[in-house]
Image (cartoon, rainbow, N blue to C red):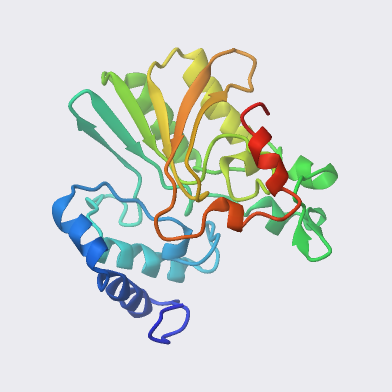
Length: 257
């Protein structure tokens, strides 16, 4: 909701107003004017936790276009909605993922058992966990998943940076919006990287309002791991202010878990 009282954005003109309000911030203007950037949207460019087909294709398209209107994104001539893309820069190739518009609904939307007393289960069990692990659930969508796998395998760059959204590390609690909430696809990506011997893959992730460096273990049994570097937020509360009180004491044990 904008400070000027314009309400929640639902159409392109509304989104333009939000971007203009953000651009009133001198620090943001300075960064955009002085620093090269590779940009990708997240859920709040449309609405919180949006997924393919919700809240509506029209609203998603308006958010997509407004993002393009204000951020540096190279257009894709064959698909005006496509935002995922790759860049080669010296010894590095960047694979920029869109983890929003092609995903299935989060498990706490699609499976009623995930909701207990009006809130999502903090540590999913039973039918909720089975929904998270369902093999048909998609996160990247088939086309983007194949593009990523083929691109990583074919890349001649020394380093392959996967510019990601929500973390791919398994944090156990409230997994619904992250890769962890789409367990089969998460496992398939990690297993592919490790089993195919793709070297120097680093996930550059965001969203969780915390700074994390983690070797993500491959759950598929091939051994090995994939490095993830998570950037902390600059405009939101830290994760300690957002977590349920029951979870906060567990955070220090996450590295060993």
